[in-house]
Length: 184
Figure 1 (cartoon, rainbow, N blue to C red):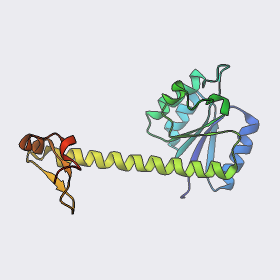
Figure 2 (figure 1 turned 45 degrees about the vertical axis):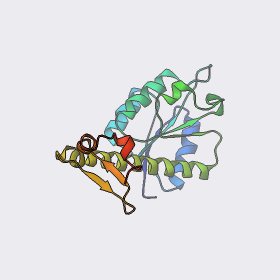
Figure 3 (figure 1 turned 90 degrees about the vertical axis):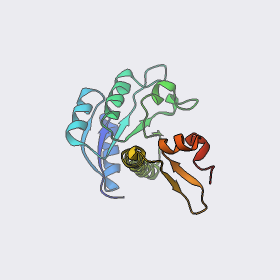
Figure 4 (figure 1 turned 180 degrees about the vertical axis):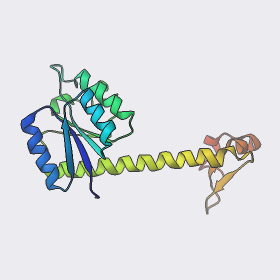
């Protein structure tokens, strides 16, 4: 994996030092460490890191604190991947609805193996890159394929129609769901 700049969002000073050392031993850059809240949002906007590694603090009921949830929602709008570090008690029966609503790219529970953390970081960044490529291809499709004004299809080698635009829907009388991947 190429050089990554990671913003560490962690309130525990002891854990911060250890985690930063582990990340740097893997060749990652950790130039800034901040706590949840406005400081982390400001730092994300200023530095645009490749990944935000955010420790989720829990309240007594096992749900991430409202401050961390609010912070993550604001960071999500900046289109950067976030990896949550969390205690297993936050997710006793899977990811809680409130935590899922922040839409993290990934999460890892403590205690974790250092190499497991590295693996999850690399997968998180890779997944984020794939999502961006997919969104770019969708935008390309929307900008080029759809508004041509002509009925247009993309046909695979086996003659199956893989994509059809709205003009083709009108012409054929079939919906895309009935055409794409089903009709020759």
